[in-house]
Image 1 (tube, each protein chain N blue to C red):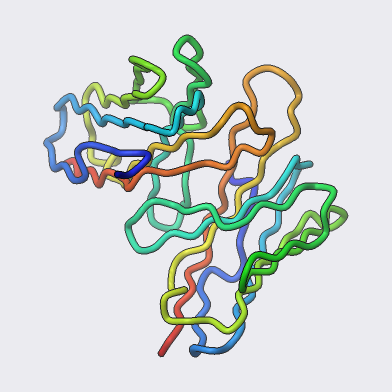
Image 2: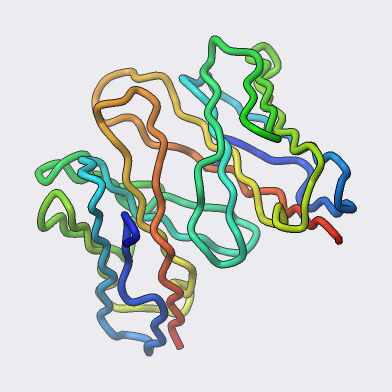
Length: 114
Length: 115
């Protein structure tokens, strides 16, 4: 089984709808991240969480919110989706007990907002 | 903002040739990492080099780091069609306290290895 899973894998929605993307991990890592990837722009950090009570904004948090329901679960919500939020979304985790911040990625969610 | 910038943006080579990708960054780092992404899939960690290291090997991968020039290179030797992917460098800043340990990714190099 995959260590970092994301649901759904693909989603098509309409402008104005609320969307939740979910991430679960079995790696036992404290740190979790949400990124979006757009063609030609690489990965950009939306939110990150270093434990259940520690949530931080990344470089592009506007229009997004997150919830860390447990150590293993980190959800990303789009309160009112807009077309420019069409992108590939990745969840990642890293182990706080190492100093090197190697990150482990989920398979991604392809979101299309019409 | 992007910390790492890969060069070239795209690279096409024949199977068996070596592929070299470069990464430049702007601020000091704790370490620099390289990741691979097959089309539309999640990134996979390849190799990490610490700021006090100059060269590191892992199988067919060789990474160099020049902190004076703020640059790194990834060499893939004897490339295979299966190496076709996008390659990203990511920088990990020094821990200055507070909420740190977040990587900054470059835009990637798309490597195509032709059979």
